[in-house]
View 1: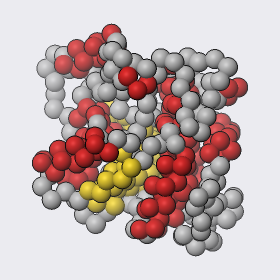
View 2: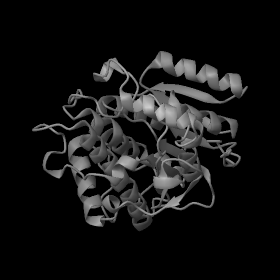
View 3: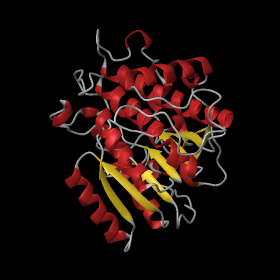
Length: 332
């Protein structure tokens, strides 16, 4: 099948500070390159420093003079999130764009993080929740656009409310869906609370559709020593033009994070059949993301599980932009 060229125009981001998680590989690396090419001052927090340095070199080879700062961040560790947040807060530069892109997908066996949480919940959702909460002063100062990367998997299954950390049983795919639904509920609730409390932040959602990335490739660190059949099929269908590529799969997040025409509390993803590929466009919210009650519930649970809190209701609009309740290790 012939592939029709798909792209969007990323606006001029000169003078804008953009923070992108998961930017050293796959879709994230494409997003990072496009942000840098648009003139953004790019902050790239990565878990693997060597991999991050390789990514920076690759971006600068394509975008000479790219303004990139590399930091260390392991989203599965709340202490690492706190340390990274503290570094940016100490720097004091407002953040204009935050893209919560990093993620881990379907470890065959349940893995517990240093904080005792299931790895997918911790990396995909709790780490990003704590990151946004702790960076809130800088996000408010920049009247930031916050885009969180969900997944087509959020349109299946449900939040595993009775055992959010999958301690009593574990199913790789359902745990992944649960974590990505949590991401979506949080992102939508963030926009509602920003509006209610005058934080000045716009929060929305994107998903990349289906494309061949390292999420499903061999990853011995999460118990996947060899490639499975699924990633081989995805690669074949991508080559045929049926599924997306990392370049096209990056576009929904870029659109959601940078376009002056998009708004908060919306979902953006590929527009072709089953939203697996195609040009990026606004999409109807998945049924699993529509409950305000569920969003408030995941917000409260996330505060409990991370020990990191946002300002109390009614405290947002009239507080100084750098006043926020933060977790252990950060002081006002």
